[in-house]
Length: 188
Image (cartoon, rainbow, N blue to C red):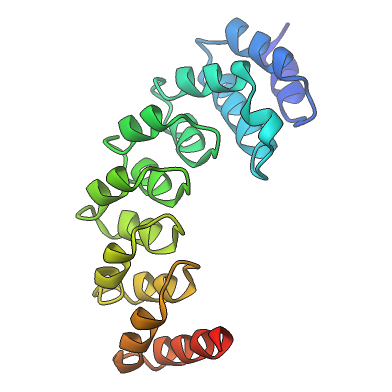
C-alpha cells in the first residue's frame, strides 16, 4: 500500500478502528500517516461515544501516539476525551505549550494535573479557564487574570459560580462585566 492510499483511507472516520490500527502499524515511521492516524482518532471521538471509549485498540493507539515526535499527534491525543489519565499527566509536561494547553482543556484531565498547569503560560491558562473540570478555587484566581480572554472564558465556564460572576461585575473591561451580568441573569 502506498502512503497516499493510506492517507485517503484515514480521511474516513468510519474506517473500522482495526483498519486504522493496521495502517498505523504499517506506516509507524511515516510522520504524515501517523499524523493522519491521530487526526482520524481525534475526529471520530470528538463527540463522546462510550462504546468507542471502551476500544482497546483506540486506547492503545492513543498511548503510542503520545510518544511520537510529531507535535500534531500529541496535540490530538491531549484533546481526545478517551486518553487515559496517566497519558494526560505525562502530556501536561510536554515541551510544546499547545499540547499542554489542550491537556488543560480536556474535561477528563484530573484536578491535580489541572492544578499543576495553573502556573503555566497564557495559552495554558486560557485552556484551564474554559475547562468545566477546572477546580473552582482556580477559577476564582483566573477570573482576575491579566489576560482579558482568560477572564472571558471563566465567565463562559459552566463551573463558574455565582460568587465568581458577582466579583467580575467590577472588572475593568466593560464586555466582561456585560458577560457576567448576562450569565448571572441566566442563573436566575
